[in-house]
Image (tube, rainbow, N blue to C red; front, side):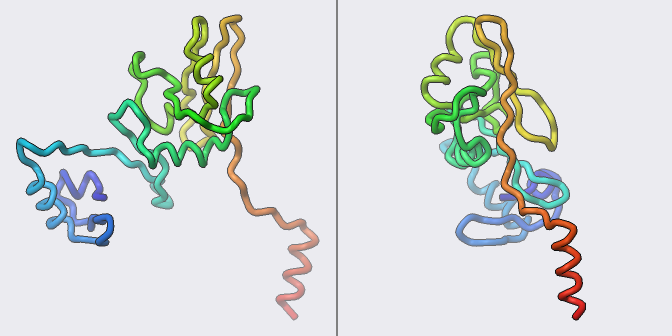
Length: 177
């Protein structure tokens, strides 16, 4: 993995080679250049990270199908079928905005669905579109043949339980003694 600045703009941030570890940016650029020839297919993927924490948050793919890592991200985010009235296990990783309508293979445009809901969504009169909300819970709009629209929000991630005011006072008192 190498940043776009290190690969294309000559920055010196180290790259990470899977199974090997960090390598200097110049060596990584040379590895990429040496790999290019007329018989080799090379694919660059955009992987996005949070600017504050550096945590990986999304990945693009030019593929029609969702790559394994992107499927896993969708599974972790969605947990069950994202159709609002269904909680069946995820069986399909689907493009919210279909590929035939120029929908990208991304986490933002992907949803975990059960087989039945995925097939139903492809029927006449159904619509789906991602709702962009940067830094917020993943959301998409699902329209039915009857004209009704439903919002599907990914479930909240588990978080640590908050301490009550009394617990905080007791802990502070115990630490002070």
